[in-house]
Length: 352
Image (cartoon, rainbow, N blue to C red):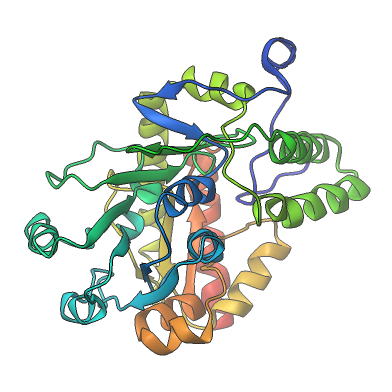
């Protein structure tokens, strides 16, 4: 058996569910949300509802947040974040003109980005479509009273499902039924499970290639519905158990990582996100390299464009210095202690 921490989910094919649902997409909703192939597809579904206008996005945004708006002809404009990952409100207001604006905002790792009263003040301008991305805090009850036109999230980041995104709001155009992304990614998940159990390096090469390229399937087509197979798994998930495990794991990990004088947490409270435990650290690239060699994979912030980094120093600094340690339901308290201790040890060694 191979022991790795982080990286993509592995999965065992549920043969009964596959026999019943495999190869089809779902036309049902989940918790009143449209069920799509991914969070990227949720943004596509929103973007194509509007004639080309301005898409106002956070500077700290990956390609999958930018591309949907570019695909449907919207002009991209980035706004700044403050050091605490809240929105620089004065800069935001300066970015808003008279034209219709699709305004995308999110709470990074559970940190509140903008208050309800500030959102209400923007609504009075009358030309803004509000889009809230809840990918980082999806499993926790939404506390905001402000009601945007759309709320969306990537579901597959929380569960070992091959595909999945959620979208609350109204869309008028039909979703396509493209199963290719789901079946391809499911194959990679099953191959990874086989590798973790048997250690075949040729399998590792194969599934890593699939994971690194599978998202290309979604790059230029229209949004698709979620696979019926992923929907069945998500619909039968015990979310209370997911919350309990992630909250406990994050708490243990934060406790261990707090021993390091080099670590500065982005979010050191549990029960607000628990997607990862995110922190910044000096000499991040070398720390990440050494941990990956040990099979401890920490998520990093996606590559940002020069435009994004020039607009926002916080985005640039986060891209260069952030690691996000896994705390998901694959792992238990002992795993968290081991991961935390290794991270602390490696960071101390790199920075001595």
